[in-house]
Length: 115
Ligand SMILES: [Zn+2]
Image 1 (cartoon, rainbow, N blue to C red):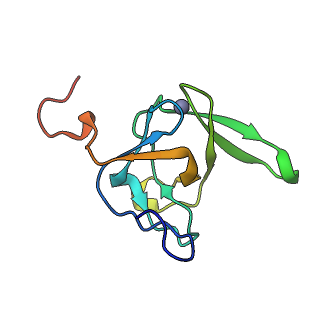
Image 2: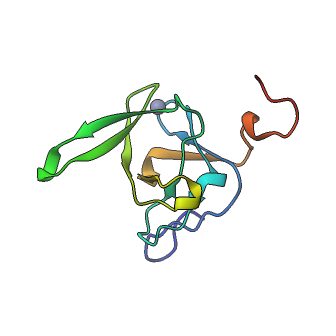
C-alpha cells in the first residue's frame, strides 16, 4: 500500500525509489523520513548525480526544483528544513513520479565499497 485514506504515504519498506519514467535510482528508503506534510520526504538522494536541482521562481517565490537527471521529469522540490541529524535537507517528492523497488541499492551493501 502506498497511501492511506487521507492520501498520505504509508510505505515503510526498505528499498529504492526510482524515476517512474526512466527507472533512474533516485532515493534510498534509508533517507526517507516523516516530515508531517503527508508528502514523501527524503533527506538525501541515492546518488549525487541522481537528480538535478533548478531554481524555480514560479508562484512568486524562490524554491529549488528537483528533476530526474536522466530524463528531466519533474519530481518535486528541496527545502532546507529537513532533520539536522540527516543533513538538514528535505526533498519533498511527488509519489506519482516514483517507482518503488524493494531491492537495496548496491552502494549501501556492507561489502567492498568502491574507492
Ligand atoms: Zn527519469
